[in-house]
Length: 201
Image 1 (cartoon, rainbow, N blue to C red):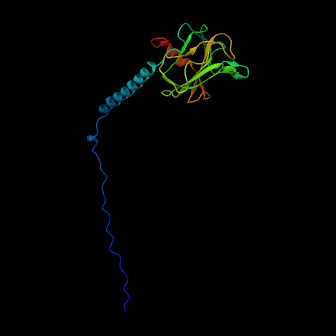
Image 2 (cartoon, rainbow, N blue to C red):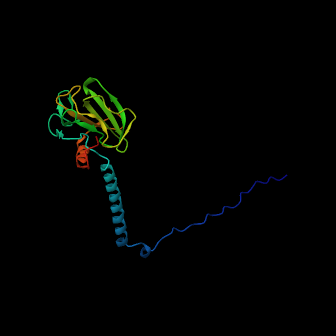
């Protein structure tokens, strides 16, 4: 009996698709693209500026009343104090001066004791920053979990704990923790000093 092997069908060559080309004359001239790019840049800049204005509108100076920011002395952020660096910014004011929320925030923690004295930590979700107030005259007047608007009362200036002279020791920490990386509070304080109003009693 003869042996027949299967013969594969002939291969059909794939069609060759020619690359699509455009005549140089069809491309938009560079002069037409530049205005579009400039308009896009202006739009992005306007959006950033609007975002900054919205944030600025929700800022209040944390001390409601006469206050002095120690910008270059021992109370300044980053001042070297022997074995450690000052991780906050001191704002001096008379004892009992009202303290208010610097930004819209939620109360993360309150407490008393050790070198911090009476303290409160507020978390600002928009900026992803934790704002810590130390040395309050009495325990904070807010509770953990309470939501605050910028300018709402949180306590009063004092000198409880490890401190000298009545003042607010303000810390700005990266993230949602009173132990986050310390950041310079002065840019936020400068912005708050320009904001309308000085908080609500």
